[in-house]
Length: 62
Image (cartoon, rainbow, N blue to C red; front, side):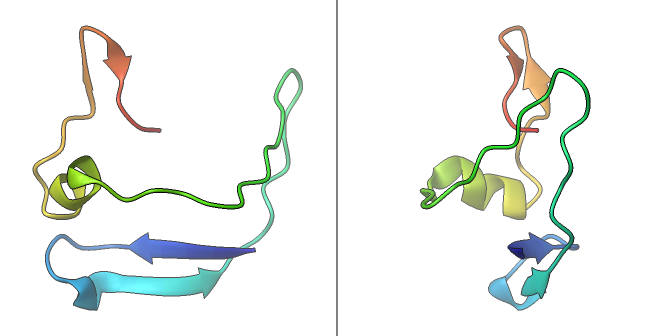
């Protein structure tokens, strides 16, 4: 499957489309096929190192 990955914070130069292995669900897990996603200000903040991993509401992304 294709994945858009980044391994450093900053500009779009750190973004890379790579072919990765299909994930295999473990016991009591499901694999969901995604056809479309959105990009918003949280995504941009995370790319620049400004995101939070969690707060009192739980994880914001996994």
